[in-house]
Length: 110
Length: 113
Image (cartoon, rainbow over all chains, first blue to last red):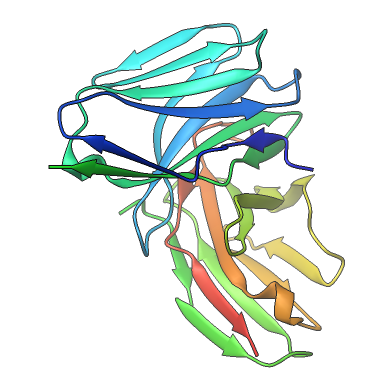
């Protein structure tokens, strides 16, 4: 029962361009959404989050958009840098449960 | 460095065996969460402890159990191991019982042969 889905396993983007990572969810009761970044041999690191009562949250080069009617979440990285190359997980939480997507591997090409 | 430590880093064992994974949360954090990441899968939430008490349960098998000790470190016990239990096991910690931003340890890679 995959309640949070990341349908693109990988994404390649040119340095300086925009990276857009997508995430879909099924449970309308989720009240908080997060993005984590993971490098090899390390645990996930928190990147940015958004409450279900908002539709946008921005932090420097990272912006998360939430479309509740479509049950869709996206992470925009502008401009993309080679150091952004990592696996990105979206996550959702509600009712003391935590659900993660399967991750999207982002490669930023110099 | 998130401040969350996990030991051991790697563990190789045989089917039917029992192992214990250990997690020390960040200083001051009261909540510990355990996750399993199998190959090509997302992180599956297993269980959460807050200040020594179980707070939430996810997809944790009956063969698995966990506890949180008075010094707030936590242990995840996996018994009657099967090949399919081979995975990365992460723990995460937060200050409060419902903080959404979790700080993850580096994980323990378990291989069951």
